[in-house]
Length: 404
Length: 113
Image (cartoon, rainbow over all chains, first blue to last red; front, side):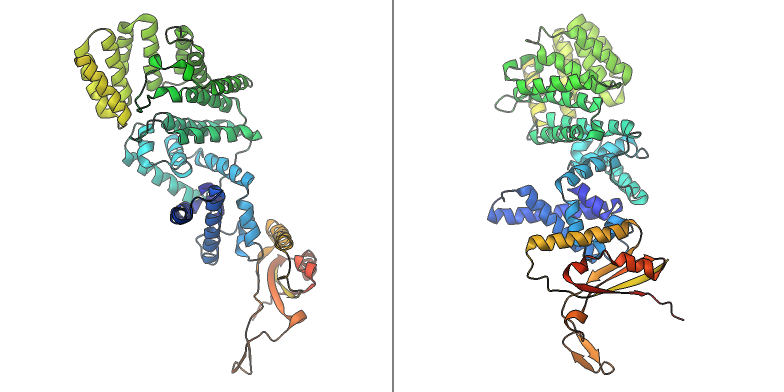
């Protein structure tokens, strides 16, 4: 909805677009409370936003707020053409295009990579500043600054939301994909303390990825690979939590609960990702996830192949979190002692040092080695670094178990 | 490039048309004006309400209606850019107002002084 409104008002008027969405949602809360949710809530919201947009256009027709020099937007200034032109903006296919177009606009090469992803999550995915901060392992203040800078850039450059031409689409798709992946991760491992898994975010990221696959211009191998990866991860969602909402580790999950349809779908996407000449980190990660999905038990997982893909992954991109996961594979293959040695080296990375999973990994390796006191002290650091209640409970229980 | 005013007059009442017919008619306006805008010819334009007031006798007499009635009444205007009166006239030929029997007068905007 925001992307359609940004197209109508121009990217220099992002706040105006956000206000209209806010207004529409507030109206919905007021009206639906008394009359109940309408049959088609989406259409209802669109209609309210559309009417609001018409009001704003009429009010700002003769001032400089909105740039009407664009031929399409010029038609909004005449009553002869205002309504049909406005309706055109809200056609379903147009909304889809604008959404993808807006994602690409956010991924403008002149905007830094962090700012791109941050802005997509905030303006198009409805993320709170706090949620974005956790996904990036950084503070809310940093995120607010990034958002401000990006909005300024949009305003100054008047970037228009459209899907780039085929020669530019490759590198720009990368950023779009990392935003989708982050969105998925947020759903899979949420910062909201009440719910660890947010199915709405998972569904949104799948929907986004699918809409890219539905569009001829964006049917790229890495998009298929990411879709496969999301399907494999999502297939395990149900088995990750106990009925009380507590976290279950991969080793202890009930594999019969894994969603076979999603695994099948993921396998097909992974197969399609094999066509074409690009090989991405998503290809690697999807393959690793696939190996987990097809293993009958935790013990029979093919760790050798998984290690191979982790090495490949690190050769493409030096990511501390990937290196962290690799250490766990090493522990499976070569024992906790060797893994711990490598893990301690990684701990020098300042980003990783603030990441709760690093400390909880070190702790579990100490546990395997029978060194309870060291394990407890690392768990106590880990618990300080996560805001998720489920994760905290999980760690506290572990500490209790070690102490007894 | 000069600017020209298209004065759209008369035409049958559209209020008894079905919503579908009305929508189709408005789509024609959008196509025509959209074409003008794409070619950089459109300056602007608006339809007018039927109600109005007329001032006569140096503004001392005010009547509750436009002076011209029916066929003569101005229903809207469009301003365009064109190289000549002939080109502007050609542009006016596509106007959807003709679908309900409007007449159009095309006049060049005159520089004063």
